[in-house]
Amino acid sequence: MHHRPTFGTDGMRGRANTELTPELVLALGRAFARVQRPERCVVGRDTRLSGTMLQAAFQAGLCSEGVDVVDLGVMPTPGVAWWSGEMGCAAAVVSASHNPFYDNGIKLFGLAGVKLPDALERAVEAELERLLDPPDDLRPASRMPDDVDPEPAPHPRDRRWSKGQPGVVVMEPAAAERYVEHLTGVLEQGCLSGLKIVLDTANGATTWLAPAALRRLGAEIIQVAAEPDGLNINDGCGSTHPEEMVEAVLAHGADVGLAFDGDGDRLIASDRNGRLVNGDETMAILAEDLAARGLLTGSCVVVTVMTNLGFHKAMAARGIKVLQTDVGDRYVLEVMEREGLVLGGEQSGHIVQRHLAGTGDGILTGLSLLGVMVRSGRSLGDLVDDSMQRFPQEMVNVPVQDPSSLDGARPVWATVEEVHAELDGQGRVLLRASGTEKVVRVMVEASSARLAKEMADRLASVVAAELEEA
Image 1 (tube, rainbow, N blue to C red):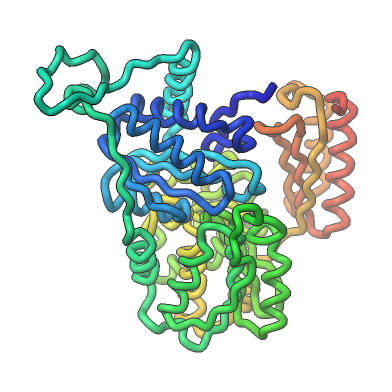
Image 2 (image 1 turned 60 degrees about the vertical axis):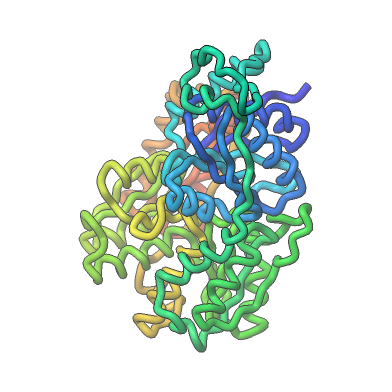
């Protein structure tokens, strides 16, 4: 018996065809239509094997409720969000981001490509339950043009229902080309001439778009993980496994490497020496550049609790304020929108530049990094060296029976206070209960990797003892 997936921090995910079934996804399409009430919805997917099946099911659910659909085909998540903004309509992406091919998911966006807030996701989930238990077959019935209109059925979307027709699906043949035009518009034409760049597209949705955009700007491109077969998305490649990218950078003497995840909203980079550049370091470079050009609104950036202490110290030294949120790009974006800020993101490489896009876009993040390199005439490695010094970080996932019991575990928090005191401002401790697994995540940053590991292991042993290791 498989459990029914629910919404997490980034949409609904599950094992394709066993947990995330076509029947469930069709009902999800109907629920989204009923709650969001769009007249039209753009839908895209990544390259995983189950994508066409689940996209067809989701689109059928939308059409069943009278919503017209624009099928964008294979398209990165930020590309779908951009199209949503261009067309002023709702959007959905069939993708499980950096998960393996056998998982899939549905990410939902409201008007203008903005991710649904928690309250709307809960409303969609509640409507989904109503549709499935017991099945609700109330929907617009097709009729001949000369049929006499019946009394309109009571329904939140009366306009479409009174029309009495299901929605239709149309393809958008210009989807990829228009999105590439949007991407290349953020830099001067030809400005990347002379740069040799390795792209790791994770056998995913950026496989064709990323090289097209960078070549159009003049770069020489070497690609790895660029032969999607439906099964190899994120498989030992991309932003979570950038080893092949690093090898290619060194082998080809490239200036920089850019690795995306399967749906293209994350970026992990490499300098010419094969040193990895994570989201914290990328944000530090972009923040300093935007501030120097007078574009960093509020002189402030938004990060999550996982962001390295070195980033906080670097921003403080430059007079840039840092706001902190829970883990999850949706929470970063909520604060950015509320405060009117342009830069925020996560250590994972999911970075939002609101002056360029309404969601994290790995290709745009890469282009912004390259733009700083071109304008400054400096290498990525030099930019990182001057932007921040990363504190060594040790992460331990401790299996426990009930992660929620962490809050009341007094001996654990007493040990946390002891470690804080010993670090004396030259490190940081974070403990949090996972929302997706039966684990407590222990993270320690310290002045040395040895010290970080010692303290993380010490805390992990206390957590395991107090919370009864699973």
